[in-house]
Amino acid sequence: MADPVKSIVTPIRLEYDYTPGRATSRFLRGIARHCILGQECPKCHKVYVPPRGSCPACAVPTEREVEVRDTGTVVTFSIIRVPSENIHFELPYAAISVLLDGAGIPFFHVVQDIPLDQVRMGLRVRARWVATEALAPTIASIECFVPSGEPDAPWESFREHS
Amino acid sequence: MAELCGIVGIGQTKLAAKRVDVSMPGLVREAADRALTDAGLDWRDIDAVVVGKAPDTFEGCMLPELYLADALGAPGKPLLRVHTAGSVGGSTAIVAASLIQAGIHDRVLTVAYEKQSESNAMWGLSISAPFGVAVVAGAGGFFAPLVRGYMRRSGAPDDVGIRVAVKDRLNALRNPYAHLHLADINYQMVEQSPMLWDPIRLLEACPSSDGACAMVLAREKLAKDAPTRPAWVHATAMRSEPTMFAGRDAINPEAGKQAARDLYAKAGITDPRREIDCAEIYVPFSWFEPMWMENLGFAPEGSGWRMTVEGATALDGDLPVNMSGGVLSSNPIGASGMLRFAEAAMQVRGQAGEHQIAGARRALGHAYGGGSQYFSMWIVGSEKP
Ligand SMILES: [Zn+2]
Image (cartoon, rainbow over the protein chains, first blue to last red):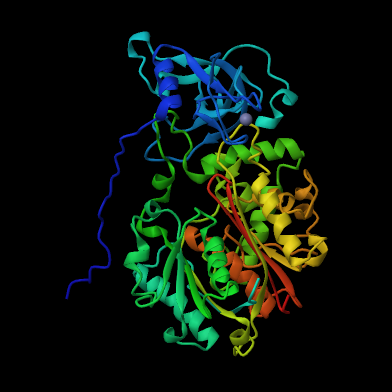
């Protein structure tokens, strides 16, 4: 008698139609014209990038739009050596939490053009954009961050974000 | 609270990388049968069932509460499913306890499980959305930057994570249910294991496991006549917060601090380090031991690592932590929180065998989930509160 069947492989797939809402729509349209838009909280005055339309800390809508710069500081990071199906960066890569100049909250991206053992907290970076004709309403329009060449930011200036 | 809640039965499966000998229903049934046997009860004695597991995509079983109703003996009874990411095993037990405490049911069966070998949790965790870049490779990718932030902030020696990893794996050798039994575990072995998500090494991370845990909870009148002395629920607490907001301290989250304060206040505890005999907490990456020691108020901010270095959290320390080997030795995600809660209860019932802390009278069970945004915890005692 053949071996009994104990398990079978049945792949599942999920595809979503993403509805970004007003704040994130404006952010994504901004990205498509080389511009990073945040929204400032009327209470704590922190600037959300990307904006989600509200400040969860203060529980109020955020409306005032602020353009932030495409330079920033690496507040913390990890060198990733584990493959993951949905991630398309070549291993190993440096995942960074980057605080853009003018922003009040960091977000995840990658830093390139620097040896991995030199990636550090406080490193100053700037965005490397895709070619102008390839700009699209997705954060993938920022290919990666690269060192800006400025001196490192002092720990006290970003401690609360790391 | 109107009613006291006693834990009268505890069961868990052998935790392993791959349980091909059982289906998902077989897995939950194994834990539930053991809990019922421990309680000296039968399926018909159960009034309601509360089940928990991590997000459906982690193992590819959509709506497990429908699929498993039968195996959980739920037909004709109330069945609830609880869902709070990695903390779910803890919050599931708390929901079950609240049904007793509110006087709604006399006896409740609560079960949490995960059969991770049947799917791909890394895939389930690595979401891409157009407003964010997919760089976070699984849970390690999310938590590694926080660990680095903690190291910088606290000035802890670089090897605290290695020490925790060794301690918890040594504890696991005393626990026959634990997934990882690394007989030759030592400092060098952890130190030399590959960096996966720098600064987190392979052996500083939890494994991926199959397993289930179950408990039978009963109201006071029924619990006091149980064949094995019950563990009594002294206090429970849950808190949550958004994953991201400006000014959030993701290393030492406010929700965790609030939950701990609430928990100790309800249990009448003013000095947790002295008044709690042992703690089983959710440490999927070794550096979370010192981080949670601070968040839970066992150590002042910035000094949780000293407890590890000084041996305070070892089995013979003044606050043993993760006696069972913890999440670092077994991680069926959905069940992991309940395993922590159950270990706390086993300790105060004197049921923990080789990893028993002598004379444990009051124990903490703790779980967290999501991006350190859900917290659930309970204090259980050998005496009524
Ligand atoms: Zn605000």
